[in-house]
Image 1 (cartoon, each protein chain N blue to C red):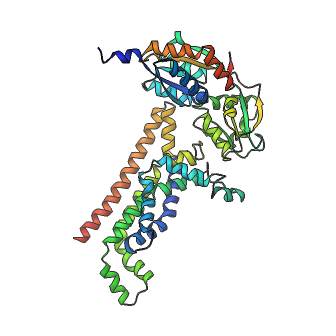
Image 2 (image 1 turned 90 degrees about the horizontal axis):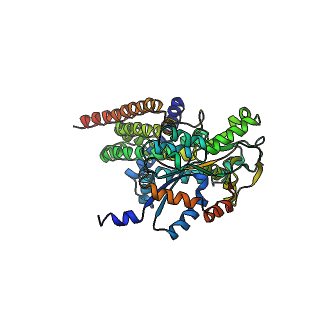
Image 3 (image 1 turned 135 degrees about the vertical axis):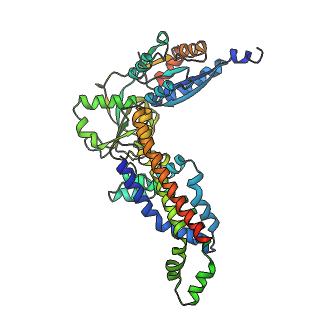
Length: 224
Length: 217
């Protein structure tokens, strides 16, 4: 009983979050830990990969996805608490790199199969009728930050990332903002197997607080 | 993708074999300054995290890397192409080849080499007519193991070659893809392939080794 007491007071909240949330969320989690006894353990990756980990029983309390599709797939499998689900943030795609999509020899995107930024990019490329043309030049990567790095290092001539990713890099140039891209939405939800539903709810509430929202906004996220 | 994996692994094995044999022989037979350093460096990929080796390769062969940049300038790219797969495979499997060959060379009695020398054979001739034939089984075992290790390379490959369907996806990265996507049936098929190939390679390497021991006794 006594041994369990500190565990009850201070929870460890395991958060699986889309790679694009990395910088903003690290700052927000740091702020939260200063104000609370809870500890936040962050795990970043492609939302599709994180969703798979949750399906396989990974110990995750809170899932912050970069698209609704991945969250829906977990919802259908009854792996998230639908009551807790909120969609707070949005984002926009940008084209980065030294070359335009037409001129680039290699275009890095997130792997559309697991990376929402890649799924959005594919949607956009299809919409403007370029998908078939650029396909031989595409380099699908494991998460959106890998795309940023590939363009930063010059290993890809162009890439499609979120505006927020381009903002955290000092080394990439945004060659075009995509204002007419697909609607991007970041759903957050508590998992069905959360260790401590209450603690996860506390952090989720904090993510919606004025202070956290200000951080998201500063990193370039669009608040819905 | 199976064919790409096999072809790149064969190429990697062919490329590393002359170097591996040369280094193994130098380590087994010669004393030279810096030997222990080279010995350690050659073994590193065996114990370092494959991803760390991959990172070094990425920085070296990337378009802004010390080797990648000049190659890119003449229109030759490594990173994110099949060439990167070959390099990753060769670097990662090299230690296995060198270790096995080195032991094989060390087992060749010096006396036989000396006799050949006194009979007037030049050092190169001694190597190709005495040392190498006698060390053959160990060297072949090493080549087989290195080939098998190449087929399964993942950690360094995914960093330098990426995982581009139809172009740089290998059996190992494809297993990873399938698991990520929840396509377990595909993953199991490739798993079976990987297990069978690994089994055959290790079994043949051991078989060669067993023959060697029988010959010696």
